[in-house]
Image (cartoon, rainbow, N blue to C red; front, side, top):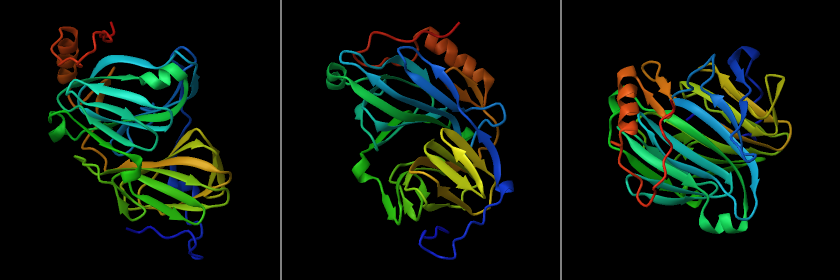
Length: 305
């Protein structure tokens, strides 16, 4: 790895304005009950960063006692979902029988492959007492050869993920390799994902080894090659350049990217595939009840008309 510690006086700021390929300010959507979602990917000018094909920033939202999030069972194919929380908890249930409470800092990777259904709801205790929630959901498009693999689910508690501590910043390596450390999560293509928290004035290096890279500024403000960028924003970089991200304020951000896939993907609702015909099949499968059900769930989200 080419990561360098930030206390190296030779680090400097080698990035140029040309290294920054695209700045995406996520579009805000209100899903009801004051639940705000900011969507960065897919975008009109960029479908993917590495295999990241969908990137939602939800919250902050405060649920009062007795209220919560209820995403009824719905299907996926051809992708893996990453649910990552900064605040609050979510109960995951899927058609493979997995039941997992998702807590802040944990890695939760649900690989849909040939097909899976799942629900996401506020756990009972948090629904009773009320909770605040802030987090991210990303979709990882699968390589063409892996689009029809068996569905699966992986969970790694926050304490089991590698942590990097340097002067002025900390980083949790959620997936892949970053800052010289590797996450234990199993992946079918090379990609990486890390949460970085930097104090004001700290310089953080973005590893140049990955083919496609981006920084999502969750909150705070950064400076790159003399230009300032406030969150929320997705900053996408060209390959090869060593990038230095300088926190102008205390900043929380995600470093992400990986190898580009072999071609574009079709997206319709919750389905991702290299084949339009496969998406049509998935639509009919969900409409006619051919997806496996989520145990102990009677509700479901119908196919959009």
